[in-house]
Image 1: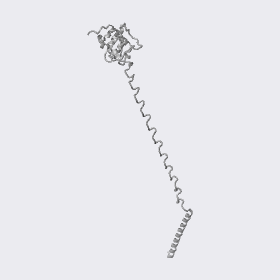
Image 2 (image 1 turned 180 degrees about the vertical axis):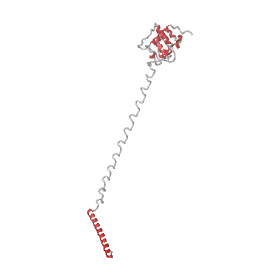
Image 3 (image 1 turned 90 degrees about the vertical axis):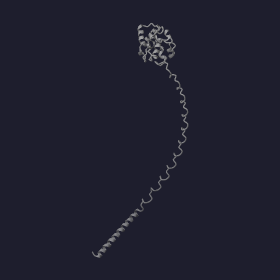
Image 4 (image 1 turned 120 degrees about the vertical axis):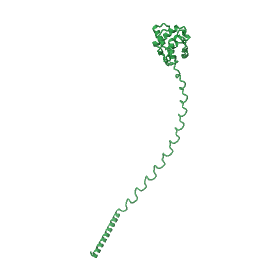
Length: 237
């Protein structure tokens, strides 16, 4: 290609570039003219003073932050009306000696209990107190008089009174009569034969009293009456 032809091509390229630049600049200008300032580039309508950004209506003095109406002196914090001397804290009127806490005078089968050895109100002896008792009853009474099974300590009536031993002088008197054991332990001025049996059951023999309606009590009492009627003092050893 000759020089003239190359010059013509160069000029054509330069002109085309210039026209493209002008065209693009014009287009941008038209766009800017049509749109004007960017509505988002201005002051943000939300950037104005936030109605919540001012004084916080809750940020003021808390109406509850003042003196607590319950924070004053607690009307219940004073002297406790129940904190004084307890009217029940004094000497308990029931704390004294209990009149029922002593020896129960009517508790059956208890030592030194007169109700256990004194004839019941509705009692009727199962033997004849005058000594007119059948031999069968007397024989049974004599066997019981020597029976250690009646006691809890291995004693029998005969353990103390075999051979008419250890009877008091008053034993020569018909029943009822005074017996030191009955007086000293139970305050009894005199005892019947069946009461004497019960006294011996509870004390020397450390056992329970016999049933007042039992044949054993009747037999023992009948035998004791028979021994008493033939008593003339302790037998000589």
